[in-house]
Each structure stands twice: as C-alpha cells, then as structure tokens.
Image 1 (spheres, rainbow, N blue to C red):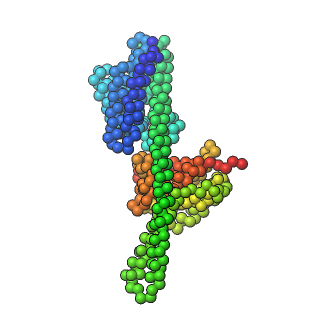
Image 2: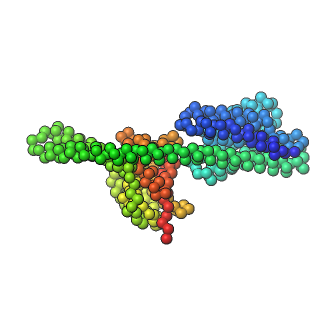
Length: 418
C-alpha cells in the first residue's frame, strides 16, 4: 500500500538536486555553464526517481520523473529539457524494453510538444501564472501516462484502479506545486537580497555625487561662459565655429550627467501633490512625440480612466521621460511604443511596451545598478534615478523582456486614499 514515508523520501530525491543548485549556484550570474549544471542535476534527480519508485499494493510502482523533467524545461531552457528527455529515454531503455518503455516513449514525446507551447512566456510570467502552467503541464503528462498504462494493461484490478489513479495524480500535482513554491521562494529571496545591495550602492553613489558634482559644475560654468564669448567673435573661421559648437554640446552632456548625479543624491520628499497619472503621462508623450518621430517610432497611447497618486510632479515626469526615451532608443528600426494603464490591488500600473531589441535575464537583473547601461553612450544614472524615485514612493518597477522581440516596463504606484 502507498506509504507516506516513501513519498517523503521520493520528494527528497526530487528536491535535493534543485535545492543544491538554487542555494549555491543561482547566486552567480546566469551562464551556459550554470544552465548545464541545472540540467545535469535534473538528470540526476530523474535517475534517482526511476531507481527508487513509489510502490502500491499488488506490485504496482510508479515514480516522479516528470517533476525534474518538467523543471529542466521551465528553469533550464529548451536545451536542458531535451537533455532531460534523452536521459529518461536512455535510462528507461537500460532498465528494459517492455510496455513501460513504449509508454514512456509515447507520453514524453507528446508532452515534449505540449511543453514547447507554454515554454516561451514562462520565465516572464508571475508566480500564479507559473503555478498554473506547471500544474497544467503536469496534469497533461499524468493523464497521458494513465492512458498509456490502461491501454497496455487493461487487466488492472477494478479495486486497485481508483486508488492508483488518485495516488498517481495527487502525488504528481502536490509535488510540482511544492517544487514551484520552493524554487520561486528561493529566487525571490535572492532577488530581494540583490535589490537591497543595489539600494546600498545607490546610496553610496548618491552621497559621493553630492560631494563631487558641485565642485565639478563650477569650472564647467566658467568654461561654458568663455565658449559663448568666443562664439560672438566676428573673425572666427568655419572650423573654429564648428569646434566651439562641439565643445558646447559636450559641456551640455557633462552638465546633464552632473544633474543625474545630483538627482541621485537627493529625492524630493516635500512638494508632494495629488497627481493625475494619465494626465502626466499624456504630457510626457506629447513632449517626446517629436523625438519618437525622428527615430521612426510610432507611439500608441492606450491610457484610459483616471488614477491619482501622491508624488513630486517634476521627479515623476522625469521618471516617465527616461523610461519612454529608453523604449524609443531600444528600437533600431521602425517600431512601436505602447503605453497602457490598469488598476492592480490598490496600485496604478503603467505599462510601457516597445518592439525593440529586448534584454536577457542577466541584463534585466542588472537594471538600476550603478553605471550599468545597455546604451553605447549611456551612464545608467537615468535608470538608477527611476528605480530610486519609484522606490521612495513605495512603488515598484517590473521588467519583462524577450530578446529580439521587445520589452515591457511596468511602473506600479500606490493610489491616493480618499
């Protein structure tokens, strides 16, 4: 008969390799080597699961190989999923070529195709969607295994059959829910730790900026003044005029960088007012319209309804100006930038979606860190300012991206009360 102790042992067999990876190797930056390591650990878990199966009465046994197999796809990627599939086929062949081997070949071939339909958007999904997807895929695989089993073994006792179906289905579904919850909790804990470290770095950069930026700005102001004096001279050559114009533009760029530094050094917690988010975003869209037109980008305004937040108008405008410009600049050729709004559990959510080059998971994780930028001539300070400002307003910036397809930046801010 089914033993709960045996189930705990099999659960441990499935859990340990994954737990080892997320405890000791997930902290490092994402690399192909780490992805391969996760795939190999899933293969180890598959082999152990098939070696130590769960046993019911009358000699009926089954294992939980589906769980690490599915995790290899969802968290290791397509290549690791193929590796895990090959591992199942090869090890089952070694065990013996019987009806069980052909059931495995049938069910995992069809399940492989099913997983591909869900795999693309899994990594950018939220926790509930991930749970729903993994639950669905596990249920499909479970039903396929049961169908293959009943087709090859129609003589299973009618008394044993309901018990087998219940235990087989529940053990798989319960295990996948446990695994997704543990993995996502470990990932969230690591991300929270990274965010805390980023906040500390931003604080240090801000304090350093405050002490340096003022000293740098004074000599720049003097140089800029003399450039304007020289530009008014009547006997300048064309080459000299061009050189002075270049010097002036570079000085303006230097002043912008200093302004970004000073923005990091302080956040205006006074001058807070009740702001209509849609009106503010519409104004920023109007300001950036000519810039988008110059870049060949079409801006689609899908903002609707009215949402009020409490913030400093100037700083919040700068946040959306930075994010919209980033979206426009991420599009190499003609594309679209879409702004939409929604209400989510006491928060207003503004989504800025572009059809640009997208970002990898590693790039997303590094957004908002000091001096990190995906631009050729950027400093990363504008994005740092966005994260810092929204954080001070008790909001959040979420980023979902797919390489070569585009990015969605979601800004969540608490709605005004009353």
